Structures are given as C-alpha cells and as structure tokens.
Length: 469
Image (cartoon, rainbow, N blue to C red; front, top):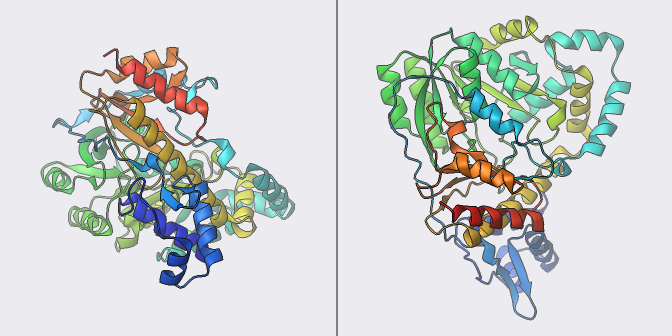
C-alpha cells in the first residue's frame, strides 16, 4: 500500500470512529504534511482519494471538510431475541418466495445478496482464464480434480501465511463456492436430529442447510457491533448436546458485526472446553474498511476444531463458484465426502483465479472495492437519515455491504417487502434470517451497487411506504 493510501485510511478511520465529525474541518495540507512528516503531494493524493470515497469535500479557499452524510442521527439496533427451545427449521418456502422475487433487473437491488458485477475485474479475469488454460497441461485437468489446482492452493495457503496462519496445503479442499464447503463440513460433524448452534439473526442459507440435513437450530443472539453473545453460548453449550456451531466471526451477515480478537479467543476456548467443532463462515474477510485485516478464529485453533470456509464469490468472481475449506482435523473426511458428491469445481475457473492472484493485482483490486463499498455505505446511511422514521435503528458495520435496519415494531417487514416490490424496490425481510421467524420489524438492505439517483429514489420510496404503518 502506498503512503498516501495509508494516510487516507488513517483519516477514514477517524471519521468512522467519530473523532472527526460531520462538517468538521480536517487538517490543512500544510499541517498534515508537517505533523505526519510526509510531502504535500502525498497529502493531496490522500485527500483526493478521500473525496472519491465520498468521505470529505473541498470548499474553495477554506480547505477540506468531513461530508455531512457522515451524520449519525439514527441509533443502533437493539436486536433482542426471544428465548427459544431448539427448533426444527422451516424457512425454505419463505426464503424461496423472497429470492424468486429478486430476479427482476428493473428493481432497485437493496435485497441483493451480491455486490454489483461492475465492481469486479471481469475483463482481467477473462485474460487470466485464457492464460491459465494455455498453461494447463492435459494431465493437470484430471490430476487437479481431486486435490484442487496446485497453484490456487498455493496462493490460498500464502494468503493464510500473510495473515499469520501456517496452514499446510493438504488441509485445503477446493469447493464449489463457500456454501458447498459449509455443507460438506456440517455433514461431516453431524447426524440428522443433532443440535447446531447458529447466530440469530443468521444468514438464511445456513438455516436452509440445517433444514435440508434435518438438524435442529439453537439460536444464539448477536450484538450489532460485538458479535455473538458468548454468555448465552456458554450456557447453551453447558446445558445442551450441541454437536457443531456455525458462526461468522467477521462482518456477520446480516448484522455486519465483528468479534474482537479477545472475544474470538474466548469463543475458541469455549469450543475447546466442550470439544465442539465450529464452521467459520468467512466469506466477507476481504471486505473490511481501513488498513487492518481481520484475524479469523482459525488463527487461535491449536486442536483442529475450527473448519474455516471462504470463497472468491463476494470479493472477486461471483460466477466462478470457487471456494475452499481449511478443515482442520476434519480435512480428510471433508475431502472424501466431496469426492463422493461433486468431485471438483471447474478446473478452468480455478486456473483463472490462480493466475489472477499471481499476476492480476488482487490486493489493488480489493482496495478499490473496499473504497467503493465504503462510499456506498455512506450514501445509504445518509439516505436512511433523510427518509426513514426517526425511531429507526441501523447498523454501521466496518466493512461488507449490508445494513440491518430495525423499524418501529408496528412495521411488518413481510408486508413492506411486498409493497416495495410493487414499487420496484427489493429488500430482504427480517423473518428469513431466523429459524423461528423472528425480527418481523427488521430488514436487511444492500449497498453493494453503485449509488445513483435511482438508489436515492428507492430509499425515498421505502420512506414513503413506512408512513403507511
């Protein structure tokens, strides 16, 4: 990362933390240059970058100021969860009815599960596909089907190493996206009827997997900033025969919550004490704002209990469906189960991503992607301030591309969902994120698409519909 990018991230962090408030003047170019020991041109480059990210604005003959859209008028969600017994999961019909209605390209995509394709280097990936195929020997096409593309495994292991995790390549299993990784892992550590601890609210696809495998959900509440409630988890692990946990320790979907490193260590000690394996769903690991990458729970695992799953679908190549699992003590069982099911993801897709990771400027792309998402988040938060009821509560995650919105309790999000679709706006209603269909007055909104006048009108439309409740 260049020095001006580092300095820009330092200023952006101060804005996110509220140290530099809306409308406040940031240090002049001369002041910043003198105080930080960098050249005026470096400061100018950093300020131009912050302008492009929508965080600051220049005023003629006055300097640079924090954008007003950084206001924080709306409070933080409380996300209260009613205590429930272990539950049979029956959410698929509701989830499918919601997802089927999100296919229309004419709707404003606030309900989308993916960022805009415009944010991904698709043409550069095509070049990597061509080069990767040219360098792929006929023998590799067959040999790599069982083990995964060797260069791709090497690149993934290298990224673990850069994050401080020494991961042997033989622990990696390349999969058809993270969902296959998570499915395989869960099948390896559970039997039908077993109890699985899940977050609440949780990513709806995790609930569908439990439903398909005939597993019962033990819902653990999640705080919007601090992540999963470790006290509740400790009580549930002590009192129930939980066979596995499925958690997102960083930028949890839908809340965007991230556990601190201290809380991740505490979580791991709980797992270790009870010898319960954890599926760590870490698909948003690369979408953090700022300059400090997150540390997964996997980094604290000294007994192979954490099954770390991720993919390139949310940060690089959604349609390529290339993910992986670092299976710990369960790696061999996961690998064998994969060979009994789908055998292998596309070898050309693996070759393309391997080539891109080596030659395509992956980290440069990620910085650009994070900056775009941060600017889009600011625009959506500002719009929510303008159009939503003052009693609305909303998250402000340090990355990802989702906001969790808690409306006044009189709002029925399923009804709002249908009303909004009639007006050309999509959203994800709260009940699809709960095994017991709670959070009826909540929604998840995506800021994963470039902010346009159409986006602004979509938020205004939602605000008008909310007045009908």
